Image 1 (cartoon, rainbow, N blue to C red):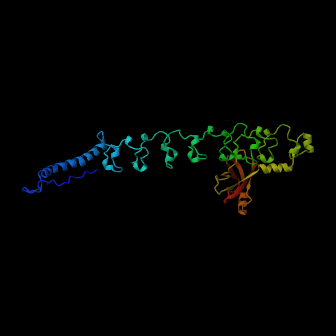
Image 2: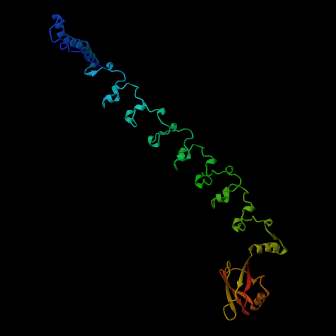
Image 3: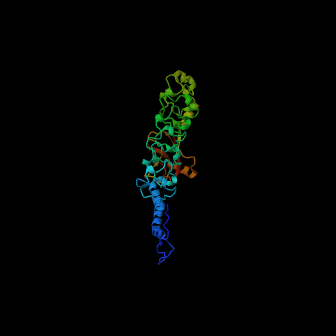
Length: 351
């Protein structure tokens, strides 16, 4: 509040005439001398004292009363640092814009007061979640995709009964160790689905074969040996033999020409070779030739190949060629006649 200044002209005596006159009586003259004091008294009592009393009424205990402060008159510059305490702040009056960045620390937040609405989208990162605190109830349906599962983390206990269907099993993933004993029944095998590669060697035992399951097409050639044939089970109908008068008398069976031809055809093999012009000795002449597949006990015929020319056949006749020795993968040919001067193609027929 403003106090009016004392503006009254106090030159009261100085304004009087310098010589006595009849203008003022003795009483008026006395009044002039008292006039200044009265004006000062009036100013003090009428202006100063009321103003002081008003100020005193605004102060209590050395402080200015709240009722004495005009609304909006205390600005930021009027408040000393550290002066505003919690008790001085009216509840609900601190707005977001009043808070400095990073000013709200953990200790300032009451327990249980950060609700969903207070969290920004994507505001909860991995580092904000305590270990073992994401429970089943916290996961949305279908939220755990393959990328979220660590390798080898899906153990047997994590898989519900009957949850692993055919579509869940990778091709070639069901190994022998995964199958329970006697678990693969006929009903579990689709037609034509058990290929050779699926069966371990020597694992199809007699007990695994159904009656009459092994047909002719399933038996490899030359694999039914004597040991595989039960005694007294080869009847005449199963052979290509005929009973003759001679065989009847000898109580035996004689093979037909067809059987003999079939035997020869099934056991015969031919090997081609060429005799070079390089011969050892001075007569008879010898030459050792590499022949893959022949052994020291092989039985067969040696002859000039049908592809030989007339000159080569003539040289072979004059040379009088014979096989005079054999060992593993080689034979020795001897020329008892003339030494051949041309290469001669030959064949060996083994039985």
